[in-house]
Length: 260
Image (cartoon, rainbow, N blue to C red; front, top):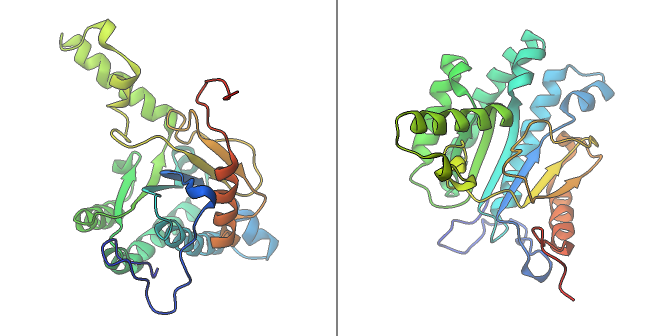
């Protein structure tokens, strides 16, 4: 990852010029459902974990690509769903945990050099203790940075996230700290894992599937959804730029009528 520091305005020697989306239209928050690792590996006669390894390299490239686009403030990557953790073979999940630890260690120095902040959403308390320690240490160390936020969704379910927020609001109501008429969209959003974060502007789904897979259901209410048949391990900066160009053509009306 070789991006410019937020304050110096210069790129590392040999880096390609930063991509500039058409008309200066840039999504503040980009999210990606990183699908196709297993199918990519199967097509090559490889073990599924090798697909996840290749997918981690793609995540590196797309983080770099987003960090180089002025105006993108947050990138959220769907790394492991709540259902994945329960429905995939234990050998695959165990290998994925080790792979996550490896890449956190490998990428952290570069994250620090490039002023990127790390965050994690999901029920991380169910992850192995060694991975929790690794994740928490990386998040804490990068918290001093002020550049783009890279958020990784681990053991994440949007339905469970919304249920968690509802329980928190109900608890406040039961204590008499909140009246029913005070339970608004804004109040509920305050108790989501993403509290205080702008909603997703652009959702990218790789691997050709046409579903959102329990990912940020609240936060993608008005997101533009870019679907590509490219498997995630093959997804690189040119594909990201294609998605950003497409986003720049969209008319985002948020329920209003188009200007006449």
